[in-house]
Image 1 (cartoon, rainbow, N blue to C red):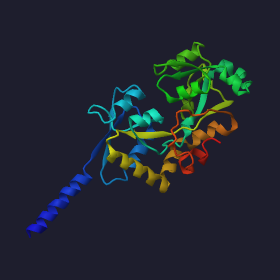
Image 2 (image 1 turned 90 degrees about the vertical axis):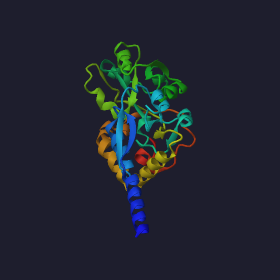
Image 3 (image 1 turned 90 degrees about the horizontal axis):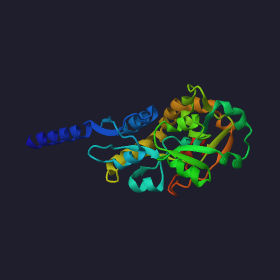
Image 4 (image 1 turned 135 degrees about the vertical axis):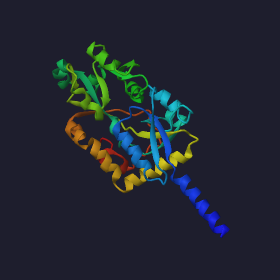
Length: 276
């Protein structure tokens, strides 16, 4: 009888431990797609996971430094680089299927005709580009011989463009629709910049347990098709409207992409071909 009671108590303790709610801290203001994907990825675990949103983490550099800290966060997501993979443990599944490698240029509406006449990579490289200091693509554009003016504040790029201090403000294609409400600015309809790019989830190097949860969860979402379903729900119609394949493509070498990136794993990438 005693052994039966002890076994029952042990099972109850195990169930309580396994089923207890666990908190995963992320930065506030996250994109709805990232939140949905993270929740879905963690839903494959036995434990219930709750997201806790942490305020006052204004830059990517600060976010990655705060991984695992007492007053920090548990999961960070960003375009990968060798430097970031030295700082934290990367879950090497591109969570937006490489689409952040497509950059569209915000320009002044008054210059639409001028941009329509630009046909060569050399003509485009001669323009002035505004890029935020802590964005990895700032380095990529510089390394590909583009004329870059860096800025540090969130919305300063639009101010530089309106003041004609830059000609183009490259943004990722998924946020192109945010420009429609701006009176004097628009998206350049003639060109698209492309480089292979992978956005990963990152965790603290000592948090192997959370890494395994994210990796196994993402693998399962891809295997059962729910990853593509979620991605298409958020982005399919928007990407179709952008007609990226109809634009003149300027291909850049991604000097920051680590050799470990799963470039040839076609199931990870938009259109299975990374922009080609």
